[in-house]
Structures are given as structure tokens and as C-alpha cells.
Image (cartoon, rainbow, N blue to C red; front, side, top):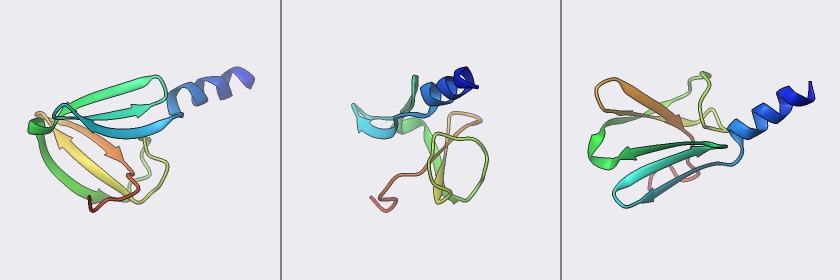
Length: 79
């Protein structure tokens, strides 16, 4: 049980999103996705319960590339 909690912690904390050098960086624990801003094709609201680097169900789904998607829950969605 403790090992399972450790793995969950490693892949979920911290959960943060930053914009730098013309890319969106989505970090969830030890996992980092770097998404070039020019590759983003759509941003739309989502309330999906699917697993994602997001602590809230009030989320944004970001589509990029041909078929890739990531769901995030930024504090200020309007910015």
C-alpha cells in the first residue's frame, strides 16, 4: 500500500502549468509535457473525469499536433 501511494505521489505532485519560450509546459510530478504554442489547435472547456494532470474537474482540454490532447485545470482559465 505504501509503495502505491508513493507512485501516485511521484506522478501527481506538483501539478503545475507554465508558459515559457513559446511553449506550454505541463508538469505532473516527474512527468513533463512541452507543447509548442503554435502546435495548439483547440482549447475548450472540459468536465471530464478522465485521468489528467489536473486537480479540479473544472478543466480545459488542449488539442495539439494531429491527435494529441492534454487536460489541465489552471487557476485563472480566462488568462
